[in-house]
Length: 247
Image 1: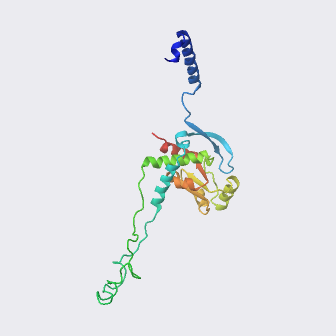
Image 2 (image 1 turned 30 degrees about the vertical axis):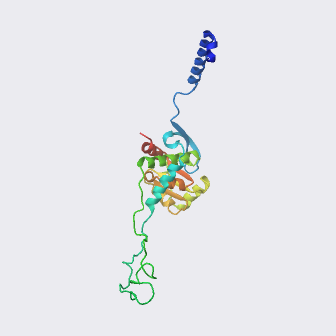
Image 3 (image 1 turned 45 degrees about the horizontal axis):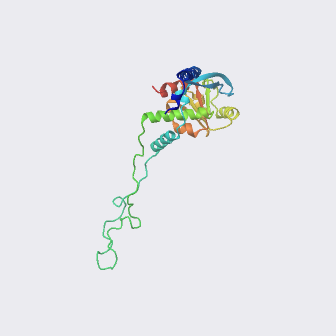
């Protein structure tokens, strides 16, 4: 027989009402909607000092870190980067005569054809590599997810630096940009993403081994994981959010 059958009905009703009120109070204290934004400092490029705070889309810069997705995207990228120009000559392509090297019978040795066979010195290569395309396929949704995960990893590790604009760089000299990176960004490997043409910045960064400048449409997972810090313009953030935010 159930235990509650032994209790008076009034006690059961009182207990049920108390539990209902407790659950209602807890439900009211929980926020109805989770925040859709994360925040980051908007910094000055030359001094790396915070100027203000901006909001970033959580669906782009705050997604869970998926190592498996990053691995798939990096493998896909590196497959596409392979030249595929390795080539060897088969027995039909090596130079040499097609004459039979020795009589078929009477020598007491193995029979021999022409000397271009793979088991002879200077002969052709059996099953060697030939020029081919090493690229593989990857769904576009996985590519976009990989970019969101990589950007979120940079944000989570405090390696994302957002500046108002990079157009105020007056000098095109490598020395001036190197001094800014050394004094403000601790001489780390830095990837700079711009939204529009910036001749001074591109010329200044051309001879810096630990600095690369790319356009927003060239953003890729391999570069994001290769460089220690990511420096982007505010307009780049808006462009990335517009492209990568799930519909």
